[in-house]
Image (cartoon, rainbow, N blue to C red; front, side, top):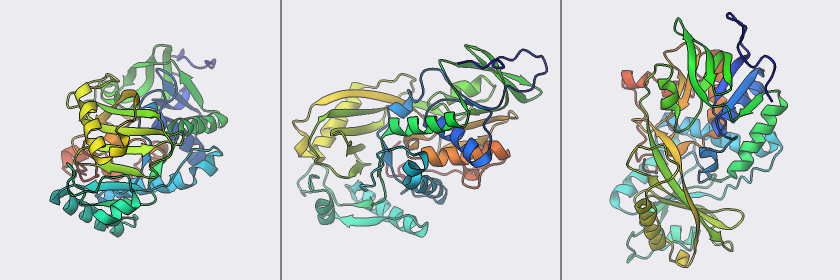
Length: 400
């Protein structure tokens, strides 16, 4: 429902909302929730052009982990993982959060060196991490083909036992329900088409349902942030790519962990209902389409069957693609923009879902205080001019 003060009618109005969040996915809903929970800011609207959590939140592969290489990345993802560990109780909703362990396979000498380096870096940052040799990988996940004659021989792998999966739609509904209980407006079918900016400050957003005055505007629309920012005269260093995934028919339980392979870019888990959830790499071309190239899925399946011969008879149920923003250093952009009152949260690449509560926490702090949260500070937009990059290409155990 539209509130009576929804539209901006006064030429010099009191903002209809203290904060307008553009994007009703996981990060937008988490930001709204933590604005209310942590900062007491409830005069907030979340605008979504479609339906809540109908974008990337509905298209991810549900993996949660914090075993990133660089200090800055490890800190924000570990903060997020710690929030995940108490989130079901906090939101009073079963998120089906399952800490079944995330196993990253190494197939060549380069993989082994990078993996061991990452294990050591994780431990120095207080993140749980282990190195397993090939035999230990076989014992931890017996259905992985660890034969030396395999097309992709397994030389070992890293294991984060606290990693796992959660049910993405449960996460979205839980956050939306709690935000709504705080009195936050969740407005669906409301596409942002532009911004009212005066003297370098954002005053309102233009939408398909009229103009909405705002004290602050926070962008959190994965895949489309660069388009929105362009409407405010800002060129963000982002590229948008399809990121593909698929699920199989329902199977009996055969896989009780998450298995990832950077070299062939396949990651597999089994959902609570029984379907296998498989992800592939991003398509090489830029696109805003929620579909991908067939040859990427074909190569993904070929690699998966080499690693998991047991899946040879499994049938594909459906495929899809999300749209991910990828920054030049494969790390997110969080913080203020050159337009006063306009904030950005984008560029998460393949890391968006696992960061959901941590991203919302630090983004809400940054918006409420007008200054970056300490965990978000290194991910500011100005790092691309200062040169203080956080290069997670490959180092995150997943290829962008």
